[in-house]
Image 1: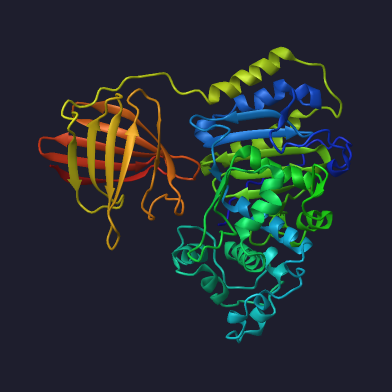
Image 2 (image 1 turned 90 degrees about the horizontal axis):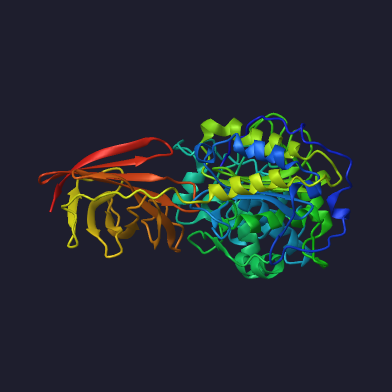
Length: 525
């Protein structure tokens, strides 16, 4: 899905004459865990880092996690409640950079042909029926660089002609992608295309016996990426353009692999040639993206040539600055009205906090202050006890509602023995099966974690359960409002506010991120 990129200059990054990081001899590898260092020990100012993050409201921006790694050591790590270091977060289109890497690995192992090979040669079942010579000529490199020449429209997710959304709604993604008509000769112009990335996954799936199996053996296991989730298409092919969920610490490992030219702890993971080609300018993305931005093999290259990056919708970023051996990772549900704030912090203020290529004198007060700010972000809010309406008792209270956009047809409330609010949301839409979602919500202003299955129409992640945080955020004798926060995805938080008036009930469902919602009437039963 196409992302918005702010035009904050990265030229302000201080390139201080250090050698390229792949030439650096590493004393350790973060296969099991990243080592830590004080900012001053690697030439960063703790005071400047503190100013960079203290001047921003993580909650207002929508930032979930922030990781800064210099010379292979974590110098800043922050998570906003209820996120933490073990949280799996959907990285959306950052998945594309992983799928590109897997193609490079498959090429090294002679599972696939070089990037000049034609896409439809891998899919003879499609090639036999194709009559457009332009599509027959499309190469893997055209796909990797998003110069397919197809009539693919991925401008906005609200656009009814959005090809990405149509692909998701189709019964067979590859059918839809390869069936998309051509608009021009391939290889001529960049046009953002998530379907193109899925073609790469389909090729790997077909030639290796399985994209995920291949990834686990040749990339994830060697790098110590043991905890992840990956969405599949209806045919079981892992989504090539989005859908991978990772810990922030593991996302950073892909950047570290590229910083080291494809080597990991003495073992060649992917050829150095591939890491260079993938992060070199292969396509000019200015015309359909932002001025000065270029594209490699599923990697973005910034206008000043200071580094390369992987971008995912909602604020999922992996920035790699080879000349300064620097990695920055973010996970977010980004409020795009705060986009400039976000980019100023990530692309200017944090890199500018590096003020020397040599270690600086330690600044323990500033280091401690930085640690305290990061730790405070992960703390739960102060306890505040909400009293539930007296009519919500142990036996429960239920209300049914008219058909509405939220999909919630009924709600049942009950007090749990643990002092939490138990609620059951029943989702039902036209032509869709009824789905009951049981949730526990904290009444003390703190989230309770729930592992549940939501309807496919909502934020259900493939066939795997969703992690959802819930808490009561307001209540009195006439109503109760519950905040529902899907964890690790770009969604919500949502508020379900139910009001009671005799036998009548009113449900207001609000998306707090977009400030959109609807109100529907119902009856208590």
